Amino acid sequence: MATSESHLPVVRQALAGRYDVREPIGHGGMGLVYLARELRLDRPVAVKLLTPELAANAACRQRFLREARTAAQLAHPNIVPIYTVHEMGDFVFFTMAYVAGETLAQRVAASGPLGHEEAARLLTEVGDALAYAHARGVVHRDVKPDNILIESATGRALLSDFGIAHASADGRPSVPRGPVLGTAAFMSPEQARGDPVDVRSDVYSLGVVAYYALSGRLPFDAATDAALLMLHITTPAPPLRTVALAVPPRLAQIVDRCLVKEPWLRFRDAPALIRAIAEAVQPPRAPLAVRAFLLGAGGGDGNRALIGLVLLLVAALSWIYTNDPALRAAASAALAAALLLPVGMKLARARRLLAAGYGHQDVVTGLNEDRGRRREELSFVYGAAPRPFERAAQWLARIATLAVALWVWLSPAEAPVEPGAAAAGLALLAAVVARARTELRTDPRGARRLWLWRGPMGRWLFRLASLGLRSPPNIVTILGERLETPA
Image 1 (cartoon, one colour):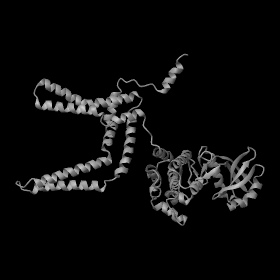
Image 2: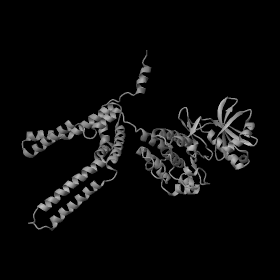
Image 3: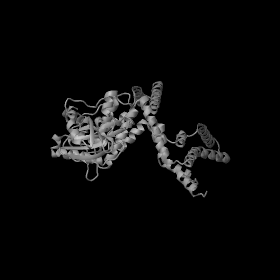
Image 4: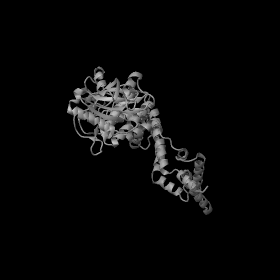
């Protein structure tokens, strides 16, 4: 900041008549930033100035102007807009919108880590800005908290400082191999190596920003930039929840995925990251009609299922214990009813859902969401892997079964049956216990429901249910009919 202060009188004199330069508000590797008022339009602006010492260097001058041109081509609510570019004597500068607020780095330093909802909103807004830039062939390469401004009045996040951004001539967001540029604490491994980078490098940097915003600390710390770059290249980042337990698991997993070393294992682009954050913070809820369908999608109403079981039992007994043709015909009818009842129940539910304007894909999406939520809950309660009790029951079942087999093979015919019966009983009990705990942990019923409705049987049931069903009119049709109806 002392450098900015020392240049202030000269800058005021050079820009007099166009800008009333007030005070320094920031500085970077190449430029000094001042708050000023544009006299002609009477509006506050931020003036980013290349100092005369650097302006004398042709490479620095071109890079500074390239930043202005790159940022000026991007018009997005979450990117700081560029107004004008000037070259006046020894001074090269551009003006941009003044954002009254603070940087993300200042916010975390003053108030500590952000709440997960606020952090998710800011990350989504910055991700949206990156997605816009990437779609126009621009890779930022310097995403960090100092370059994310938070507007005081609205809380909106704005991305700034495209000083080392790369704008591809062919519109593809990729950067060829070259010198290592950027901020060491936020560089992706490929950027730190000087390898070619693409949009997934910005995803990594945004992941480091997310880690910092949610925990108040960086994933890596070292005494020198070289050591810091080596950590990004070689060392896995500590999982976010090891340093910030309050962060929701799904959001923490998203941040951890951004920080993997291999670019192809990260989110493929900023829109994919935005969608994941939105679903983690507020998972999409299926429509009421789909949720009502899912209530019975696993096997139907209990009373009807009991009726079907009774019919099946009566039919089986009639076939076994009677030779009367009339009774056998009745038993056949009962058997057919018992077999067709579940299908009829599913067809009725599918038809009702279709009549409400939803279809097969809505059911599959709802079941996927329901199963994902259920598995997350079960993983929290029972653990993602078998616990010691479950493993012990599994091994006890195996050992007892082996004991039964050895007893049958080695024992003489006149040997007492008690040891074998005891071993068999123990094996059965242990197997039942192990199976019950496994089902509690893995939700096989949910897997069966998804298999049924996602597969050919589910598609066939919906096709059959749609026969003779008139599609409900959508809102466009209704409005069209009203507009065509004469008053």
